[in-house]
Length: 121
Image 1 (cartoon, rainbow, N blue to C red):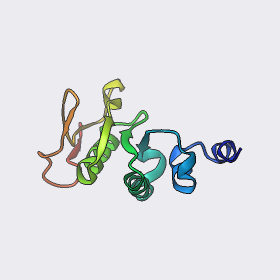
Image 2: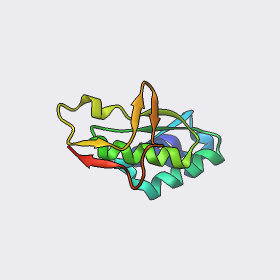
Image 3: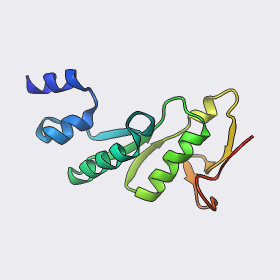
Image 4: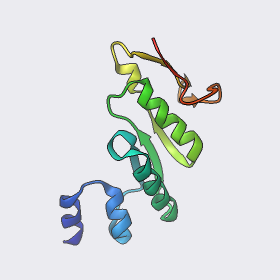
């Protein structure tokens, strides 16, 4: 009964993980920076690490600017099992370029000299 109540209040699984870890039935938490922001994402990652829960980073319909921020976040923090940042490929015209180099499922940020490495087209 408690589990259903918590899910109605906020369906984000990490809240169940934080407040009642024994009720959490998932094995992966998908962080979306545009939904929770960087500070909350750091908290989520810390809880997942403490409870040995796998991490995933995902995106909604974001441009390369936002997915670059997520790629840099993952590269800096580490420990992410799954990365799903392909939304710029779904845009008809992404107004940005740079930020990372994508080769298949590999996102490489090592070529960025400063900031996010994003430029307007």
